[in-house]
Image (tube, rainbow, N blue to C red; front, side):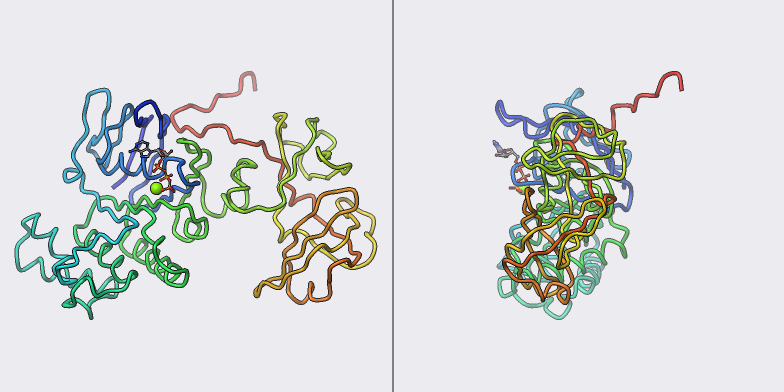
Length: 377
Ligand SMILES: Nc1ncnc2c1ncn2[C@@H]1O[C@H](COP(=O)(O)OP(=O)(O)OP(=O)(O)O)[C@@H](O)[C@H]1O
Ligand SMILES: [Mg+2]
């Protein structure tokens, strides 16, 4: 079922954790809330789950208004048909795996004959049918999290709410379960809201990613768009773009900007970016090329010296100190970088097409604010 969150606000005492947040999740869509610790992801999720008392706004799930602060409507969690999976393994240790998954169905007074069949079917789905009769406390962390998932799935909730469900697991298991979760989402057509501060997880699991900063959504886009076009320098930084350089406030009409802290001009390939006075250029390390010898003529070709070159397995990472410029991170094919060592004179090249000019902060994303229609066009 679809979920519509409109102008949601949540305060804890005099602190506002969620600020006038609006967001729509389509039926069958996987939406990931991604943001730094403390930005309000869990708070937003808890409002959808019915675990908080929002100070403003409304939430509808399908046709049901579950929250309407103006009319003092706030349905309890068990009336919302939502499934919850949290970071901690919320399994009942004194029950078997099968009993864990059956328990909520029993509480819901489902017919006895159906309970067992449904629980077993769901355990099959998450790959745990073979441990159905084991005590839940004997499972590994990854298995316990699958039990928690199966317990929610068995209820066939209208919306699944998952809050960092993989963050207690080791790296390898996280990646395996991530893929498995994505398979389940697609196979079952689940509508889900998934909270994480891990961008890899977000990219893998989302149909759309909502980047959250300071209680608000600052970018809402597909994983590819989020990765390729972060809406601000602060989002790019959060997403791990290492080459972010402040530029001088100036008009980019000639498609060049000057770095604020270095005597260096950088060519862009569009003049459409509006400078706000506090802007940066962002360059992904994989878009920079490095080669030995002096720089050939052309835009964004600079001489420099290798500061460090590190083998990282799938790629090599090299930092080049550009003459009179910044140190630039480069990711490149291992074979290309094998020949570079600290102190080598090299040049770097950067296609203007790959330089993103971004404001420090994105304008607040708010689906309820209508986009102004240009006048006289
Ligand atoms: N019960 C509470 N009382 C007071 N402040 C709270 C409460 N719960 C959360 N906060 C504050 O609200 C803000 C948002 O918290 P929230 O738990 O939503 O963050 P988060 O994005 O989920 O972070 P994390 O990634 O660390 O889980 C934080 O500054 C937090 O300190
Ligand atoms: Mg949280």
